[in-house]
Structure formats: structure tokens, C-alpha cells
Image (cartoon, rainbow, N blue to C red; front, top):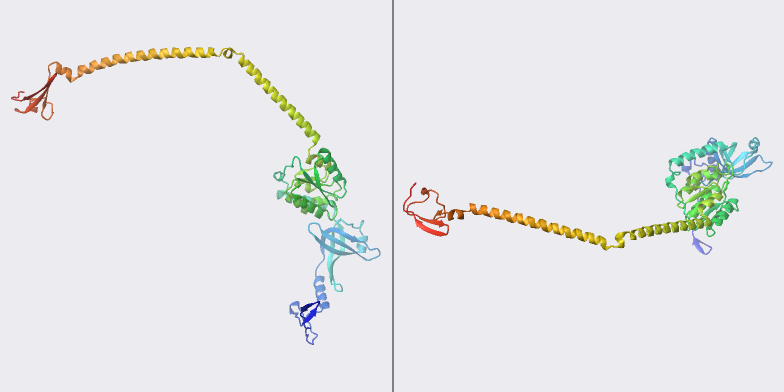
Length: 430
């Protein structure tokens, strides 16, 4: 145990190695007491890498340091789709055969073989051939990427968001001290002086354009005060606009929740960012005209709208007043009781007709009742009894119709027209 810098620590005891010169043949056979020396590990790595065949590698030149008089030149390739770089060495005699040596920002493919330097313990690619990627091939790749993104629906009209009518804050992604920034800001404030800008000056071409523009879009999209984002550049060559067809940048724009305006090219330019943006402006000036309304034009429209509304209301009031005057001039309104008098006469006449009809109905009903009463009286048993007939009934109430219905000596009940008699049967005869 020892004290170092005021702290107590443990000191590892030196490893006791056996007195033998035989080294492990495999990495799995190494142990703390039987390790590989650095030279052995370096040779093992070098032997493994030397077995790897040469490979064609594509990338963008981000650093190229030419060393006059040196037989070897160094450059760095970067993958534009990811944050990955690779150092490459190339013989000066190979570069001398090119019509034009590569420069930073160029897309190239190199035929290189991995080489491990045992003295420095470093790995690098040694190129024996280099070719520039032509614009035609890049455009073909962009067209293939365009089909892939279109199949995913990134260019669908249903994804397009409506730009705000009057944004309070506009996010602007542009080059550093660029004319595009001047065109957007000056023209927008000329149309609406109260508009405010959140400006992100970034690289709009070269090796850092994709990363910086994508980060600026994401940063402005996260700002809740920003109502619309404008990416402005103002045209350029096909090579200059290549970053705006990069898949990473296009997807970053598609993921933004804030409406996005693309103003990076002219009418003939068609980078993929134009297709994924919610609105494609032909120039930065056109973008300024699209994102904010013209205050003088809007005031003129308000004045015209107020005039049209005033004219429409006045015309409607005049029309209604004319209709009221016409109605008031009619006789029915000049002498209102005239209409009531005619209706009163109609009611009186209807009452008279109703009364006459009811009286006639009652007279007819009275005569009919008298006739029916006479018929009832004529058919009544009482009328028959008045003519001298009688109704004879047994003690149980049964009407006697034949002599056999009653026995001799039985009592009967005799109903007369004006009274009732009780009698006894003394004899029967048929």
C-alpha cells in the first residue's frame, strides 16, 4: 500500500514471468504471465490486414494537403450520409496522371488497400487509383433517391401544410452574409415591417452544408415562436446544389413540424428539398412575397371590402324601404278595417247558413221520431191489450199459449190493458 497525492492506493506487484522464450501462437492463448509483445501484436495485425483485398471507396474530399516534392499525398474522405471520415494516402505519380487534381468538396471513388504501419500502430488506406464521380452519375443517384422517397410518401400533397397568413417570427436558414438573406429580409420587411426573423447563417455548399443546414432546420423547428422556416440560397451550379438533394437533409426537412419554404434554386433547378418542402419558391424574393402579405395591398383590400359591404348594405336597405313603401300604399293598409268588414260579413253569413241548416235538420229529425214512435206504439203489446186481448201466465211466469200449458185447477195470472186478474182454470178445451 502507498500514499500518492494524499490518497491511499494499492500498488500492483510486478508480474513474475517464467524464464521462457516461447510465445503463445494465438490471442486466446495469451495470459498475464505470457503476453504478446507489442511488436508481435503489430505483426499479427499487419498480417491480417495484408490479406484484405483492395476495395473501391466513395466519399467527399474534405481535406487535401498537397506536399510538393513528396512521393505521397494525403487526403481525407468523408461519408456525406453519416459523420464518418477515412484518411487516404495516394502516390503523387497517380495524381499527376489526372487532368485536374481533386479539390475539397469533390466526390471521388478511390481504389485503395488497407495498410497497417507497425511502427506507428496506425491504419490507413493507400490508394492506387482515383476517379471523380461525374455530375451525370450524381444526378442519376439523385433520381433513384427521388423514387425511393416518393414511394415512402415524402412528396405527397397530403403532407403539405398551409403557410400561416401572417407569421410573427420567420426562421431563416441562409449563407453567411449572403445576398439570399438580404433579399428575403429586405423584401419581407418592405411588405410587412413588423415581421421578425430568427436567422441561422450556415454553410450552404461544401462538405459541411448538409450537417449545418439540417441542424439549423431542427433548431428552428424546436423554437415554438417560429411560425415558418425558409431555407434560402439563390441558385448555383448543379454541384453547388447537391447538398440540398442529400437524403439526410431531405428527411430532416420532412420531419419538421413547422411549415417549410424552399428557396434554394432558380426555375430550372429541382433539388429534392423543393419536393419535400411545403412551398417551393423560385427565388428568395419570391419566398419573401409568399411568407408575409403586403401591408399596403392588404389595406387596399380592406378598403375595397368595406366599400363593397357598405354598398351591399345600402342597396339592401333601399330595396327593403322600397318594398315597405309599396306595401303601405296599398288600400288594405290605407283602410285596414275594410278587410275586417269583409271577413265579418263572411262570418255572419256562415252563421246564418249554419243556423238554417241546423233547424232543418232538427225538423226532419222530429218528424222521423214521431213516425218511429207511432210504429212502436202500433207494434206494442199494450195496443193489442187495448183491443180486448189479455196475456195469461202461469204462476212461474211462463206465458200460456195452448190449453196443454196449464192444468185444471191451476192458478193463472191474467194481464189486461188496465189491470191484472188472478184466476183458476176450471176446464180446458182444444
